[in-house]
Length: 274
Ligand code: NAD
Image (cartoon, rainbow, N blue to C red):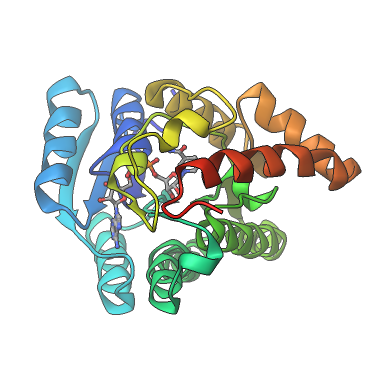
């Protein structure tokens, strides 16, 4: 079975997609090194993986925005297990709000976790994997890294940057034996919608205005693992996400309507709406 016996690192795996990926990899016989900023949650993930078997998991509290902590963590895994087969740079946050309501501190927070966190993980793992001559780096971007996501621009900015980082690394890594893939899904049922900060808007009805249905998290994890197995460059799902991405590549005008609708709906929820 693919992934059986693999050493797999997953950041942000105390919840949502990261936890579902840990469970999916564990069910395929992998050893999962799960990390998250929330220690209790990631310990629970590891316990779930170990309980379900046949793979196993250990948990560590790591803040991906801390360069030294990420580097130390990944190097320690490589030393302890003798290699790293797969790293999924998954941890991410969002700050929802219109650009006119956001401070630079909001931007900095999202960039430090979503972009710098993925960069620290990719950089450390890439250097280890180029020495090994094998390995797979998977960076979790989003459909909002391929098409604009107004009302969440810091998030979209980091997801676009991850696309650039991942595509370039894939090209450089190919001849060195390192596979690199990006994941760009549409909306997935996870805690990100409740845990994200919402600025100058009530969080309560925010998910109601999302233009598409959410994918259950375990289905998302299965799609991602199949894409990794195929070594897809870009893992995009569900069908509407593929369609919108295709439409956007033909002409940005074709997707502008969806953006306009989202902005109009969002402004109805915004405090002092205008
Ligand atoms: P989630 O909130 O359920 O999980 C995110 C995890 O990251 C949480 O456990 C959180 O504690 C952890 N985290 C946050 N900041 C961290 C930090 N500084 N260091 C380490 N861990 C940290 O959300 P999710 O939807 O499962 O998100 C996982 C990834 O998927 C994110 O990168 C997100 O942007 C991406 N994504 C989500 C969706 C969606 O609709 N849910 C769509 C596309 C992409």
